[in-house]
Length: 319
Length: 180
Image (cartoon, rainbow over all chains, first blue to last red):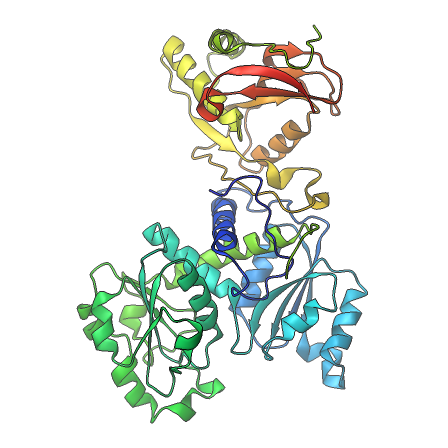
């Protein structure tokens, strides 16, 4: 465990990129303490964020991330305001900064935001006193997803260092991948990106030189400790990069035939929502090696840890 | 007694005999029908609770379950703190319902830690009753809370720190008084 004198040095969680291995370990260790709260047979609520106001500001659709944050906030006893883009003045032409300044006037302590523009959170953090939590910004970062993936892997294997993890699918359009690459490489895991050449940009090796890129899923499978399947995001334009869904499934679907090539104790992750029969078959998604619903369960204590560590500002914070 | 700073109200050799006396007092105060569990408040309450459990087993043969409680999330000054303190795990792998819960801590001073511990443990279940056992009972209460059993009573004014040292965490046993 981290020592009790450690203080989380960041004011915001804009992404995984600014975090040190020590910060990541602190977040995962805190999540462990909050998992105890979530697993209690009796009262699953602690007064840690009492009197703190949290605004959930979602400019993009999200069901599970938003629900997970809201459960985390409720378990910490925070006051919650849900601010939906649909019902706001954004439809009347208000800018992001104007919306933010109006929220600021209500003195929130934390703002959990999802926005389609990469960097929207960084912009907001320069204009607000509140701590900003990135709940997904375009194809840039989705830090709490990477933290819950890492938490799930660390809980299962007892470590992240040296783990062989394949991330498979639409790498190009995925914010989950970018956050996971920062996190997993920083913690010493060995990551292989897998997908068709059009969906796995070679330039990613410039940012993360230690990763491997492979376009042959079958070649990669036998060596992995964990396989993280990504959602084929046809609504975000995956379709423009591949010949068709049938061809995609033939080469990159995780199915029983491919599972036979994997280590017996390999684990399968997926950030959801899954396209059954497209990137993964139902018998694998629901099979004995899957940790998919555990990822969802672990999302709550991980987000509690993030909110808690950001909730008490201190003097020498960095973004 | 009013020990001067730098003195030791309890030296290393005295801790074990004091604990034995505390265990005997506990047995005397608990009825035959009561089911005991010990909850150590982190950090130093936990090794104290474990040692008490060993002594209780030696004298009664009963295996008393020991759990740990981290009270950070229940502190009354948490939302005003500068930086969030790291929370360590609370481990209560047994039911508290209808049990006699013995809270164990190193130093009782303002009473605020014990207030937080009471809130924390009541979120885990409804015990039959709760007792408080501390190694050092120091004056300066800010809440109406008192110990059922105390190893040593220490009268020092504000501006002093009373510390319990445990060989499990600090290398040797003892109670010390220092100026802050």
